[in-house]
Length: 104
Image 1 (tube, rainbow, N blue to C red):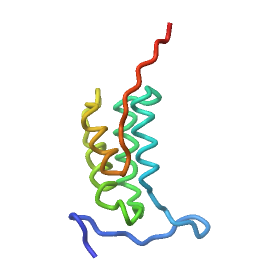
Image 2: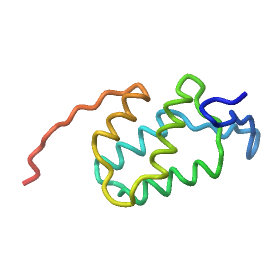
Image 3: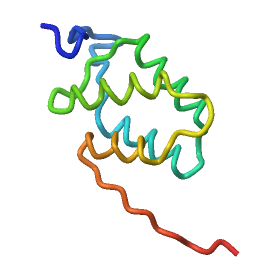
């Protein structure tokens, strides 16, 4: 069946393990970006690699994962607006709260 212009794959890789991309996987990458552990280029490369792998997506969040991965793969290699990150996290079932901490 086709959903949002993309076929829902049903493949298995490795030793019987399903190649499944979950909302937590995407949220983890987005929070790594927000915390400075990866940059926009790294995030875009990760998302582009997921599109090439064509993994199964967590069914309940198929559309949100698909949109986030596609948008991130096409993102400018520079800074990704926090509004875009927050929108994707919300679609994945998360809320965003900014907390300011003094580092010095």
